[in-house]
Length: 61
Image (cartoon, rainbow, N blue to C red; front, side, top):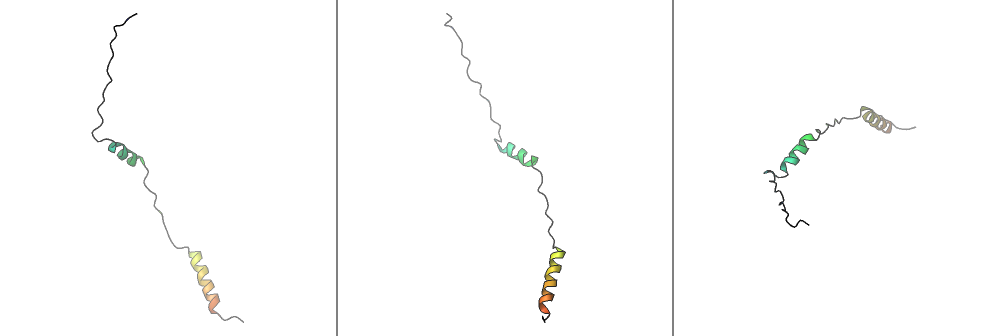
């Protein structure tokens, strides 16, 4: 039986200076740009409102 053995110590690694800040910057750069939303009036809706208003203005028989 061999009783003479050598234990190696754990290897110590240096953490990056910026910490996790570099990870969030990379994640933000990987995200796609937000899509633009175009909003406009629905001409058909406006026309229907005008038609209804005109219909209500004329006297009924």
